[in-house]
Image 1 (spheres, rainbow, N blue to C red):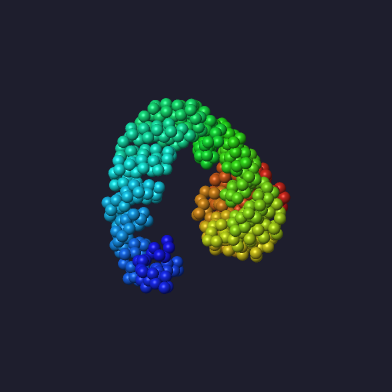
Image 2: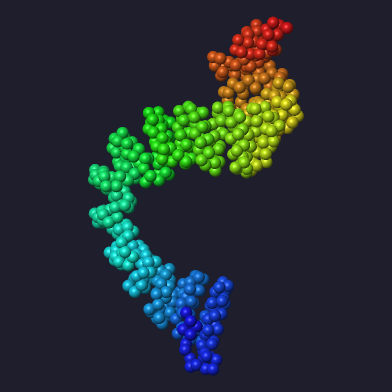
Length: 554
């Protein structure tokens, strides 16, 4: 807007502008500069100076309204914009500003008037038209709202949006048949818009008109063959109990590019999860996964599904292979790497675990679980120094996870124990228990190692007692407690616990428990019973080198 149009026009002087014009333009320029700098106080003062020069400058009242609005001064904003509209009622910007301020103040009738003016005089302003549509819809003036849609359609031309808008409005007014008619018109005018028959079917089903919905879907399928319609029909057939026919339509949908992969994945996961409970669903889950793999051979998610199904089927190797295929296609999922590592642990494939956890650790260097897994793998592979480095790295990465930190510390203790560095092992175990006083495995192993060495036996008894209290009925823990009591000199109590361990082991007690029982009986002078237990331990696969001298009385 040229400066000559901003203020009152005065008689021309030698300088080219009158005194009033010069004052007005200077103040207006100052106001705009202050606005750019975010100085609304300065802008307001400059605009008021403009009004001193020309009180009938509509643009200044408009600018003042916008500043008052930004400051939340809604009444002042309304006063200013009302003046702007009074001075220049044909300016659509002033009308829009008036409408927005009026809506904020709850003066809906005035807002409607301003927006109606815009709809009539500036119908291309779709923002104002949608504001009017929302206002009338909120007030329940459905017929008036529909008139806005008619104007929008005339201005912008045919569009599925107008059919949907009429459908929504009529539905909100409870005009069910009219709303269904809007959807039929949408199907007729825009047959490629699949949402129309989908919404049509769902609305009919919600009204209990299931047969009508099925008939309509079948007609739409004959016309389009769209995959999403197959899925919708499958829902109806499933609800009716016709599962075989429903599955056929699901397969059609899975073979279609028109159904988003995410939607197919949700369905396939449901089948896989159900197959874990209902084994007869495994073939259908497998078929759906095959279709996913055929349609999306470069996507990771179908292979992840395949891994889950194979795991349910007890095929750990197949599950791991499928997960590795998924990781080749998309390695940027820490959860997928974690699952692959867990499968390798379950099958005790330590070399494979070493590779998987190493690759994952490179991709996710801030996650402690992967160096922990790599340390575990290297321990099993006899690479103790490398294992210790990985475990220490894992510990340094752990934040606010005491249970996990305790497990890592217990593994470091185990490493030190295996290299017979008992002082270091004890220190790591003490740290593990301090971090998590209920770490059962750390308590049990530490207690057992102390008992075997005959050192700090009171500490061993105290820890073992805590273990059997935390996890009653476990024969392994009962054996540890018995052995700690035995080494601490409480032989009779030791016998009670070792016999309890044998009882809990059932028909085939382990050779270690049997041997310990024999040793405790021997310490009590019950030689024949001790001999019987040692022989049973030998028969169960115990160490002949340690048992034979006891049996032979050497």
